[in-house]
Amino acid sequence: MLSVDKKTKINPVLVVGMGPGGLVSAIELVKKGTPVVVLENKEHFTRIQRVEVDEQTKKYLEKLKGSPMTDADKLFWGDQHIDGKLNNENGTVQIKDIQTYLFNKLEEFSNGANDRVSILKGREFQLKSIDPQSQNVIVKTDKVDLAFEVSHIIAGDGARRGTIELVNQKATDEEQKVSYEALPIQVRQQEVGTIY
Figure 1 (cartoon, rainbow, N blue to C red):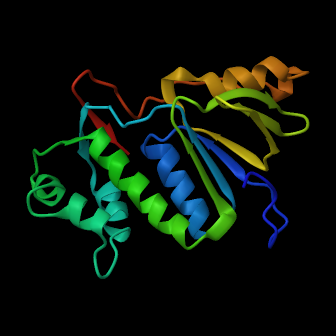
Figure 2 (cartoon, rainbow, N blue to C red; figure 1 turned 120 degrees about the vertical axis):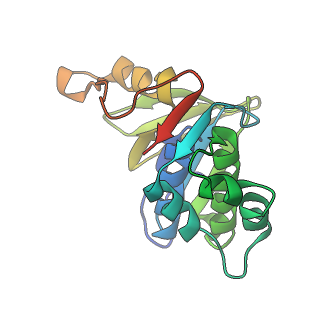
């Protein structure tokens, strides 16, 4: 499950966090045939903030639609749900609706990817350790610790920044340490934001 892809001999990419950015990263990696482990310690998507979806994001979401539409597509794009809101100039969408759709699409893509995708979702999965030198990762579970080597890590855990803190704990020199820099392109608001 959490090992080198037998066909490609490539270690998986670890995607930490199932926000829109982490889920899109995982979907794009799976579509390219890259082995992926997706880790999210929350059981459910709960982000109720409303966001305006820009044209680029809308086009990306539309490209994910199946032909014929799958159950996930019907749920997200149905007349009673997102499509009407996305076409409304002043309409907004809750982030959890976008997350749910992206997660459902990741599961659909995963079905054709056999053993190249592992989704670890729930409170029982906690990222415990990252060694930047060996690229070994330990995920703590209720039963055992899962240890595996990764090729890359995508820290999609947002404001929690726990992934980067774990990398920095084991970094032996300043060049290996990761820092955050605020980007001026997205102003966060309490009730409405913008997805770029």
